[in-house]
Amino acid sequence: EKTSVTLLGLGSMGTALARAWLAAGHPLTVWNRTRARAAALAAEGARAADSAAEAVAASPLIICCLLDDASVEEVLAGTDLTGKDLVNLTTGTPAQARARAAWARERGARYLDGGIMAVPPAIGVPEAGGYVFYSGSRELFERHRETLGVPVGTTYVGADAGFAALHDVALLSAMYGMFAGVAHAFALIRKEDIDPASLAPLLADWLAAMAPSVHRTAEQLRSDDYTTGVASRLAMQVAGVPTFVTTAEQQGVSPELLSPYFALMHRRLAEGGGEEDLTGVIDLLVR
Ligand code: NDP
Image 1 (tube, rainbow, N blue to C red):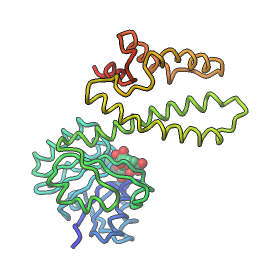
Image 2: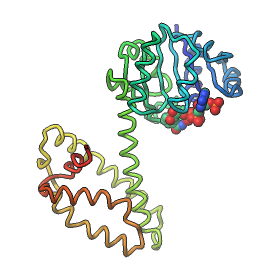
Image 3: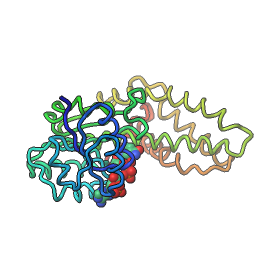
Image 4: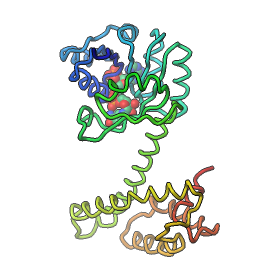
């Protein structure tokens, strides 16, 4: 017998999740503020509840996929969560997740927070490699592991309800750093007779080749030794900074995306980190 699921929130993500559970044969109750979206899913086999309270009452497992934490508060306010397993896939900060976990406990519910590492078209498509970070009640996670794994993969990262959001934000933050570098790279060739499409595969391969360096960074952080396994000393890299800044200037490109990182490299060098990897920069960020 497949677990009955209640899903609150049928935006692009919620709708994709709903379809995956329906396709896998899970009895699904849905509710959405704008009713038309629930009606569309009812036509595909879901049960559309008239209110959030009715939807919550319908299943042991309640999934929220709403816009933000404020909308979760608003939607769940008038519902009875006693004895429910509440899984919140709404993006928020670690602090919001921890507060929501305590809030759910006070209402007699078990709580699991989730951070979705996938876009809606990747839901229900295992080959796309998407997954959800989960943190909070391990008991809830183990009990519903199979059901939760239907739309997309699952990765449990700890009992601290804030850890899923923290992992989510950490990965996306690294992504934005990469996007910043990519923006600068394309800007450098923008006015030249270079086809962006010829730079793209070179960029993609280079970024992929550089990505495994995160493992060395992690080892250095664990051992508190930033000088082991260093191929490119900080002192050498700082000596190269003028090449990047001058090239940007000569290409008529603002160095504003790279400058803050270079400034941190300079500071670490001034503080004696010349023989280190770039790992020392991390310590300058942590206040
Ligand atoms: P959408 O903007 O498509 O949908 C938002 C949903 O929240 C709708 O169901 C909307 O209802 C509902 N909602 C908003 N405010 C309220 C409120 N005050 N009361 C009741 N319902 C409300 O967003 P997505 O579906 O794309 O995203 C949902 C969550 O998933 C977000 O937290 C997002 O960060 C996360 N996520 C999304 C990804 C994506 O690529 N889309 C990727 C990873 C995570 P209504 O239909 O009535 O407007």
